[in-house]
Image (cartoon, rainbow, N blue to C red; front, side, top):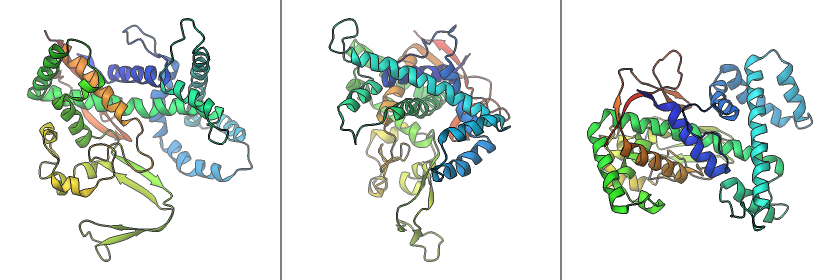
Length: 377
């Protein structure tokens, strides 16, 4: 029996860190001691959901933004001095993440500086932070990202891309463990492709596998890792028209005043029967092997991915959605070819903690998903 959450999280983090940061946190070996940065990132989510920290995020932080004349260092000092254990833990986590981000930045700047000068590091590095540093140096003063903001981009990449992708992968393997026909069908497609290509697949080849693509799309439709997002500060009074009347004063439209706080229910949009049909709440990858229903195409859903709101849309979509999709496909392609997955005797609960995570207990909510894993020939 293998606990899948920890291994998939480690794999997702390492793929992300090597490609986005040009840095390795974890060699993915059984005896590896967890990097302090990884421990910090894992601890930030549960801490941020504590009531006292939620209050700080929703009330205190907005007030801090308005009080411009007080130095930022004062607020940090207050966080250290106040008898507030959760805030002390947050500060400790931020310290670890900040130090590691600066270390990554220094290492990356050194690699970029050595480009074109010969030697073992002469190859032009292609990770996102290296590209950011390289292009930032070319930008004009007014367009340049300040040096003190670059470390924040590092933590943003990691925090936004680690748990979402790893928990989406957990859902895929949980579904396949409980649907042996789908697992066998997908394994057959993967193995046939490996024989045909006789090499590691390219991006285009991996993207061309229809059932693998359908499994990923359907999982991201029915089980979006984040079930809702919020948007604040609508810049003007707006009128929202409805495609179907709902119970309001006139039933046809509603006013959204300037500055309103909006919650977008991702899951509701992705699974509405009005668009996806009577089987909208069922996991059916085959729906993606033919054109989407006319109602879906006509709805003009403002998402960046497959008529879905999973990765949002508009001016602030998920910029890493293609990376996340390909990361999922690579991991599924490798693991399903080698291993068979079956459910364990432990019941799995899916908990909406901002990101939907699996656990074996409703009480502790510790991320955990054991599956019976065996080698296949």
